[in-house]
Image 1 (tube, rainbow, N blue to C red):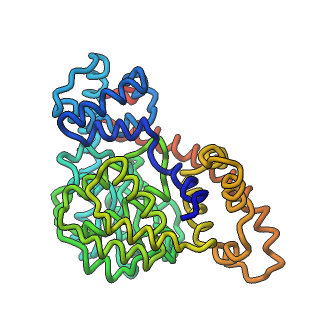
Image 2: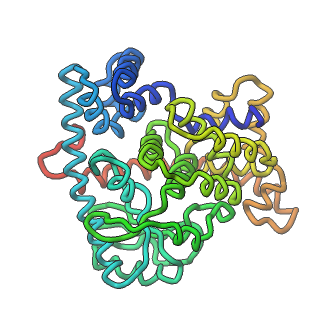
Image 3: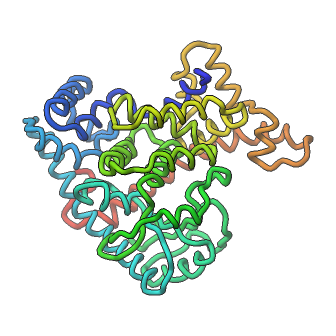
Length: 408
């Protein structure tokens, strides 16, 4: 494995502080208590860290409250008050979220539209002991391509409005916004990169019946769910939000019969071995998740055979998801030789990668793309910041019940 590449991709993983916090949330007994003591010592003031949304404390606050109680830990009164308030707020918000989700699933089921519930909506009720422990900021539904239009038309009766009136089947989801500000993503493929997508027929064949928000529906198989969680985390990572680790942990621990062979074969076939290897190694080595060594060996072998163009594509995916910045890339890669190599991949990718990624058919157009890419990168980072700010304000305004202060 190219050390420069693996060092660069490690920036998508949780920081040491986040890792100790995750251990404190996920472990039981003395190991959980020790993890909390180390985290407490490292951050100095957990309450202050939580209020500043530092290192993902807010995303894990409800789980942390339950873990502290489970492990018999006594904490500062101000922190306990903060965690209790966060749990109450998330519980009330979860009720609102599940009510909207119930309307969506009822409309689809009532009109015979086949669907699979994805991401947080599925994980909250199947991987976690209580839906309030898993914050959900959107609804994601997988549909058959020929049922996308009927499904989108049904959503107006549920209070949703399309972001765009142009509906073109492809790899990116069709997004609608609820009157409350909650986004709904209608997918017809699992990932946003075409050559990464698992054949839909295989996903549907392996999907499982499940009751979500009181409505009979379907969810991905545990193997497909774990693959989806890890790849989505890699593609859309935010260092301050390590929620995907808890998702993956609960899927692994909760399914002892998880079909690892199917997941590994799926990852290798669809060119996902490298990102899956990076995320699973973190889960196995830093969180001690029960992952078979043969699984990591098989993925490691496949990942080591990733060619230069695939390596560039993997870095580009991480950048497109907002998980990496040029500054963080330069900081995480130790030594100038690997740092220069990574920055070269980012700023001056090979012509072969540009032709593949942007479907460039004429060589004389390639210089224009070398200018276009940095400009697009800057524009995207500005857009991400604005979007996150607007979504947060919309969710706080419409989804937080009366009487609960948004900043509590």
